[in-house]
Amino acid sequence: MTQPLPLALAPAVPPSGLRRQLDRWFAPPEADSRRTTWPALMLFLAPALIIYAALTAYPVVRTFYNSFFTIADIESAKFVGLAHFAELARDKTFWAAVRNTAIWSAVAPLLDVATGLLLALCLYAGVPFARFLRVAWFTPVLLSYVVVGIMWVWIYNYDWGVVNAMLRSVGLGSWARSWLGDPNFALAALMITHAWKWAGFNMVVCLAALHSLPSEVLEASELDNCGWWDKLVHIIVPMLWPTLLNLYILAFIGKMKVFDLVWIMTEGGPLWSTETVSTYVYKRAFNWNTFDLGYPSAIAVVWFVVVVGFVVLFNLLFRRRERLEY
Amino acid sequence: MTPSALPAGLLTRWLRQGGLMAIIVLYTLYSALPFVWVGAMSLRTTLEISASHFAWPDVYHWEKYRIAWVDSNFAQYFWNSTLVVGAAVAIVTLFGAAAAHCLARYNFRGNRLVYFILFSSIVFPPQIILISLFQVLVEYNLYNTRLGLVLVYVGLQLPLTVYLLEGFFSRIPQDLFDAAKIDGYGDFEIFWRIVLPVGMPAIATTVILNFIQLWNEFLFAVVLVSEPGLRTLPIGIRAYMGDYFQDIGMIATGMMIAVIPVVIVYAFFSEKLIQGMTAGAVK
Image (tube, rainbow over all chains, first blue to last red):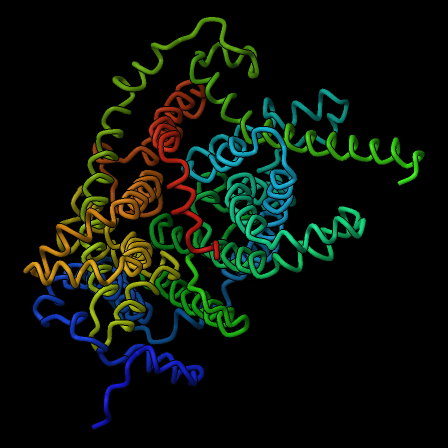
């Protein structure tokens, strides 16, 4: 038997990758004052583990299992093997949903993060009421999607919405349209609403990162008569890069799951132009007359693998040591 | 600096300040005016709104709040939300804190593995559990019950709660625990009489954060509850909008009823909430 190594000594020569992960998972105990009996440990952990097992682990396994069946009503299930997955590959609506979700995930975070950075820079430059504005601009983050969604359905309303009212008042009435009813604009309209809600979040994170920048660097650039644009492009953005990347990834993963806002504002319409994978799963499971829980489970499984795959990929690519919260 | 450069420098500074102020004013209007608009509409009748959508209320129809509260069932939705969210937050805080303390304080084989398992489900897309949770709840007669929704909510918020509390609890100095042990405290007294009081700031953060997130939760509430009398506020508002699509004034009042508690909580705990929400993104 190998002698347990004190935890503090173990990372002196850090083993890499999977090995390190395994070492951390099965790290042997270090000192007596940090040990206790198994019954005590179990009593602390059991409630959380039981909840996890019953309400997360079991449902995940069951969804995988369900994806091989056709479940027309809850008592009878018919085994169909991989038929759902084969059908999925041919399902045009599914691919439209994947396309829309991919656009959301890739494009919308740029808008969110850029707005957040711009707002953070304004506050960082030292304006009056900066502390108040930081709190005020964050407010939309806390609102329910139902409230935000209905608010913006009204803002985009054809007859009396704010957007069209403003266009008409400056003589651009011909540009007025039913923003959520036009397949060419509906997805963009949703992304703008999403950015409205989340810009404050990105602003707060960017501002915190700006405040933690070493002030000497910025002062040095001040002395060098560096213009504000040069300062932004050559100093601030490169130094904030890890934060910006982190925010982009957070938003990217978050947007792969986008459901609430789409469902409330457009229900995926018009003509599938805002359908996302999440709304399509919901529709197929609970909203269509073709009641079958198997097929939507297959979609959920595929998307689960894709999302987890992206998370693992991002973690490998950027080797971020910090833990991410999604 | 030459004398002639001074006015030019001053001009650019003014331009910069002007541009900055313009952005700030515009963005503040952009983020605030939708609220003001809905707030104004919540005090006007639908008839008045149809006449002019952007007018300030002539008469403040405060009675609309009473009508929404009593006649349109918003009192019921509010009560359901309070009950479900309150119970879920209480349970998830207790269970999460116990697990977080255990993981942060004790060394045992598999500690990090348990942490990883509990934490990693935070990245799962909700659909992977949505459909089968519906089945499970139906099978155990928990579909269309408040208890079922509470349990699901506990499961949903557990990863975040463990993550936030473990991070904080692990920074409590070990000396405190050694001293408590010498004084003869058992494991549970340590948890109850040291960790919980000392960890109160972090616990408060998770309580507020979980409250807001569950108060706004939509997807699971819409799938797992269909009984009108059990609807939570977001589902109630959406159902009301489905039934009375034209009644903009009353929908606005309902929206304000859902928003006001969140705004009040935010007004008191803004820093805690911002910290909690951005905990994973700030380095």
